[in-house]
Length: 304
Ligand code: SF4
Image (cartoon, rainbow, N blue to C red; front, side):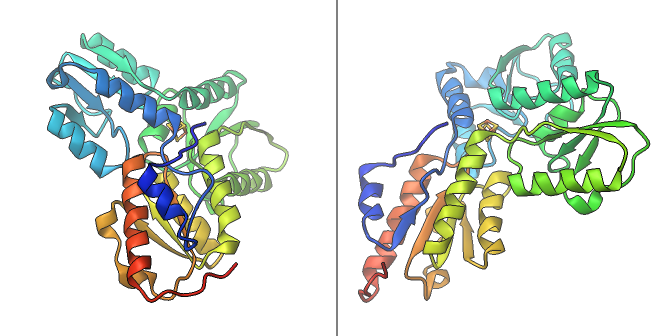
């Protein structure tokens, strides 16, 4: 798990007493390692990034500038370049074989924790269970997990559970699933399938769990939460939803430029967090802008 310390500028912002940083936030080791591999590629024009690398438009724009090709829909067509980069979200074995058969050289940056989800799903299937994946339909990670399974089920919410005829079911989660949601879905599957042998393997990744826990710890101490990350990022969205569930106002921004001082009105203590694909520099920029807003307004006594 990667704990993010921030730059000197950001640390200064941290001391304003009005901006409270979550203990764990921002880029996880899986995304960081994938970006490191990309940074080491000498001839980007020969590489297609297969599937969305990160749900972070800033990062994607930077990769475009370097000359990488991108095929956001990981399972459609065969990239024209000789090298294909598999993102941290992973792909199915079937897709891997399809690319190899097309003569592509693969650079694989699949996160080890996503590999764990694939392995758990395979194991459940080997036990003769129909596999249920708790996650977002159409998400590249979920697609990678389900494509190797026979007749998989994807559930986004407990209300989607229904009786299934199989005597044995197995459940795994997309790595960025909120733990509470996973437990609700598992309980719903068990309730709608009494008498069925249901085995749940918790495959939520530790960075996701840590960032959510840190936000939960912060919520009682803040008036509002600023969440930094891509609009399409599942784990970033969940951080904002965690605040909303506790009636704490949350603002989700992709960059510092998105931050509107009007949305901060009335907030004395502002929490700050970021999703696992958010660049440290982006978090720092948001923190600096928050600090600038705080400095520009009339000083108020910070509550303790
Ligand atoms: S969010 Fe979790 S599973 Fe996804 S890349 Fe980061 S550490 Fe890996």
